[in-house]
Image (cartoon, rainbow, N blue to C red; front, side):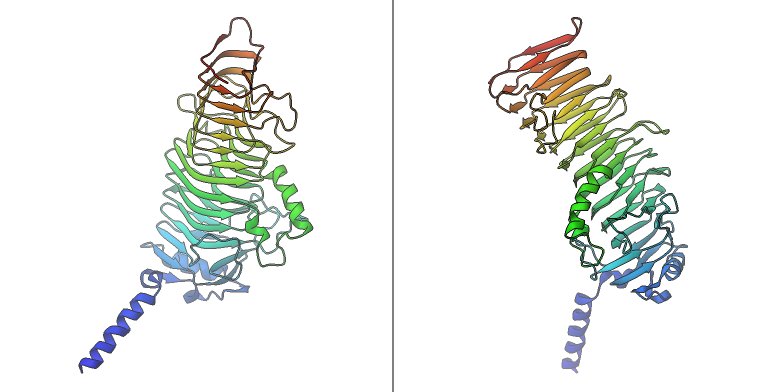
Length: 426
């Protein structure tokens, strides 16, 4: 009798240790509503029925490992999580974990998104893949995921080759949360706008290897890899930021975009944001600020910038860089900062090196118009001009910097501009 009890206890402990905790707390499973997960059968209706079954009380709709063809669109009700079982970052391990093959609305960029999130709903642990996408003939698809309302979350998701990735901009939203998102979006990675209270985006990595390394016939290998690397710098905006009241972004990265981080004015207004440990790599423009809120602006701390930052002529808000590193893209980068507008741009404890690979006469920082503060920065580029003050300069303070090879500042500012340059060293 005692031996039997011991065996039962061992069996119970073993079951508890090996069972997927999602199975124990799932409200429904898509397979329970007829989803096949064979990459051939359209599972759209089965998914939606499972999601609708959880609508009254909320809960988790589990998507077990498999490849599910979704030829339509899905709506995730309030308080419901659509949850897969592939929660580790990966370079498109097609055939493992939970994968959605998206085929609906091809050529209809403005159609309903693949996944629509509502208040306090989320998608988690799923790889999204477009099996019919072709880099030689790119197909426009609608957004992969769109959020509306408060507290929508996207967690542990891979967007292998989405045309447009995550949309927290088309509809009103607050307190969106994006974490651990990887992939190779082709037009826009993440769009933020219409956000009336604090959004959070962290641990996002956009890299074409997410598609190139996929074990699938449409993966851009060989000559198609070269086509992809030519396509992205002409088309991709990694992060498009419009109206948002406090956007916190941390550990975000994009490589080979046209623009890494683009801050714009929309019909909803301007935004403000704080970015830490973020970067844009190998691109013509890493950061472009066309507009930001005049009382708060945007701030970059401990960021890595392999390209150029631009502030546009219509910007009125402050733009601040602290403890950031700037270095060039060969034959592409001229100046590492081109500044216009009415806002003040501040560089503090930043490091500039190797600028002017496109045109050796380009200064590291070109102030065309507006105001600038450069404090405690280091410039490494031999005999090249470090800073040029243009005819539209209103004010500039350049203090406490180290200019390797000697201070080389070109001052074309008007006579009434307020300029202070001093306490710099070689």
